[in-house]
Image 1 (cartoon, rainbow, N blue to C red):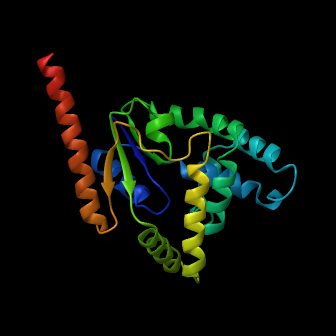
Image 2: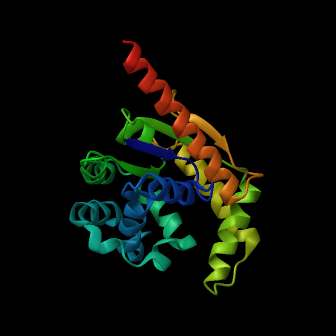
Length: 217
């Protein structure tokens, strides 16, 4: 079973994907970490002409060993850099095979990101699109950072989230768009446990319908 979980930053998609993976005993990949790792690798070249070329090289050289420093990869700075390298076509192509290989491993997997249901796994068994308003997402991310001892400027963080959304929406190589057959889950007013229950309910319903269709055919 392949479960695709998409949505904007801090919507709760990563937490829900982790919960779904644990519930169903499936491996989980936060695909956003791939772009964050590439962005982090070329952060010193952000405003230089060679930024794009170095980002492509970093994406082509990426392996699982580059995804271990979670605190650094999930920083606000890494998020901004991720959205900048994500608009580079060859970067997306270099990371495509990494993600497809993970998704199609024996037994299935759970992947979360911004184009899983539309680009990476258009044939996923279940597709979820997680949504929450910008203020709620800002507060969630702020609390995550504060839990690590990071001092947060909520005003700046809010605008970073809105700017990243705008950049991703204009991304010609994928951005984040709800797949036509994805199930929308609004989490603005849901706690983690309630949101996970809702996500599991969606998966169960979809798989039951598919099983019924196979039985009756």
